[in-house]
Length: 151
Ligand code: ADP
Image (cartoon, rainbow, N blue to C red; front, side, top):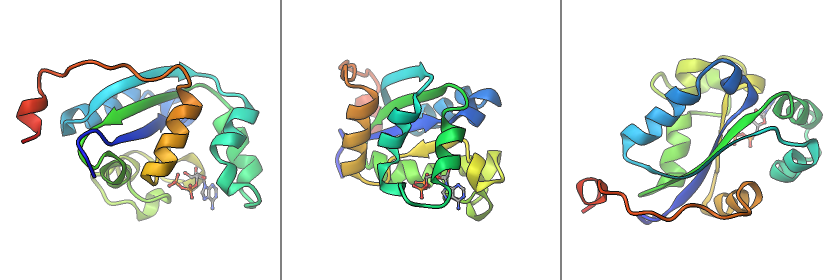
């Protein structure tokens, strides 16, 4: 856990089509996280198979890749204290029906196969995902708010 911990958060194609990009960004901004990378991208199936390599072999894998390639996604990197674990709490559970009200999935969606956003599940997968989606690197800048958010 550190103030420079980074997580990869992605608004999935259904989240983009439903106009939820701004709301999802706002939640991370308002919580106090710092945005250090952001892009709208139409991912290829090959790229998505790489991103979800750990799930290859699951019955839902082909449908997952088709869903994720069905439209553009918004990929972003958020930095701040405990970003990975807190990001997962902010997202809710994989199944939206098991997600608490107040979480992104608990507030905005219903089906596990249309759960509107992704968040890294460990610091190691965040590092891998950030490299995969932002091979050009993230943006370094000083946030004027840092001393008001962290001790
Ligand atoms: P998470 O996205 O919460 O980390 P997983 O890594 O287990 O969850 O799964 C990746 C994505 O695959 C999920 O967010 C969801 O879109 C999809 N998925 C997982 N389980 C199922 C399922 N049983 N049926 C359909 N899609 C699923």
